Length: 247
Figure 1 (cartoon, rainbow, N blue to C red):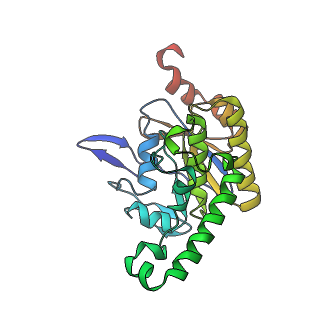
Figure 2 (tube, rainbow, N blue to C red):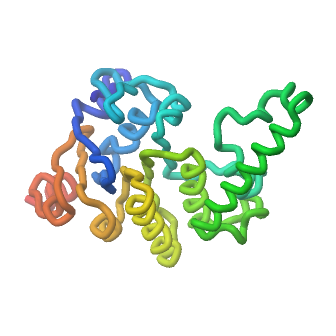
């Protein structure tokens, strides 16, 4: 796919596949087009050219909520928590088509609304326990640490019953203890629930531990793909990261 902004090609004829059940990494120097690519895949931007297929279905150009409905969800490099809501409320807001969203249901079908809200609450509490945030369930999201906000982002994606999760720099601002917890959660979700992961990350130790395969972008183009060991030895990758120093 290709994405141009007033003549600047941020993504230039970039083609790749993310295999079902994998944890695929996307790396590259700053300005390589990685986040723009994520925005294209998840519907925050429309591609200038090219197609995006998810589970055999064309999703290129669909708005984000439609992509979400297909089972593809994402996190952001800078967490976008709802600061004035509790950690629990942040999760309960995620499921779509809640009965209580329609005013007349609250008036005429209060038992249905209440039953569904209890089910969503129970699910949210289970997810918070899974990501080790249960003890913060009543805390305002603005008050938790940056690492805990990363876990909250992951927890919110799980409330959407995803088939695929895109993570934008999950390791940024996370201390080693929480990072270990996050890595374990990602691996468990892949192994136990079959969720596919596609993540942008600058921490090469994290990429080497977690990702296979790894896709490398530079100047909007894919320049390499393979195992972590293969891509770090690729001359094109070294050139992209080191430039003239490599020569």
